[in-house]
Image (cartoon, rainbow, N blue to C red; front, side, top):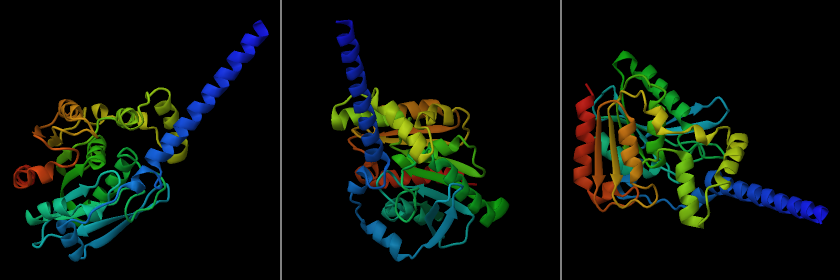
Amino acid sequence: MKKFVKITLSVVIGVTLFVDVAAGGYMFNYAFSKSGYSSQIKGHLSKNSQWFLRQKPQIWEQTTKDHIKLKARYLPAEKETAKTVVVVHGFGSASKYMGSYVRMFHNAGYNVLAPDNRSFGMSQGKYAGYGWKDRTDMMNWIKRLNRKFGSDSQIGFYGISMGAATVMYTLGEHPKNVRFAIADCGYSTISGELSYQLKEMFHLPSFPIVPTASLFADFMAGYNFYQASTKDSLRNNKVPLFVIHGSKDDFVPTKNAYLNYDYTNGPKKLWIVKGASHANSYSKAEQLYIDKATDFANKYFN
């Protein structure tokens, strides 16, 4: 009888481990791989994005320490200036779809740099960085801007969704010459966002699938996403931060906005856009959005 129980337990444990590894691997590939969920998201070239591409922005490049070639679109202001806003796209998107935000800051008189994060748009890479891996890439773009403009360089951050998380994680690296940051509908932790999506999309518990997916991310993508938290990255932040979020965001829950706002210790502002879904605040309150975002930029650019 004891032998039967031992064999049964061994089989159950073995099957459980197999299922967990299979589920964690599937989740990793689905959420992180360039050929996963992000490839199913079809971008839309809005009129502003078409305008952006018609301007024939310069293509900038950098090669990361892990030998990935990244690209960005750079649009200089109509009048020469050393003030640049770095506009960062969300998950499944790319710089070419960021026309509304690029045009917003360009019309305000600023240069705009719109990077394609690793595995998106023109950039290389097999796996998404979810903002955490991308933060070091952002630091390199900042260094390039500072080399270009020297001591006169002034930089602003704007990011949406994953791009907002990228911005907030980068603030933890204390980037030089950054005067302000705007984060629209960004998540606080990657693990929290993955857990939420696992429940919403697949009706599955986060444990043990998310921890197992983390092992895949560590081995395959080169980073531990459990380290990514705005609680840590914003703890010593002094850069003015404007947190924007839609009140009806069911992709990155609105509670993230309150967390991110509470975590930062510099000058800060919070705007919950009534009735806006995920990444929809600009469309919901277009002119007011433009006014608030550019007013915030104008306030902190010298």
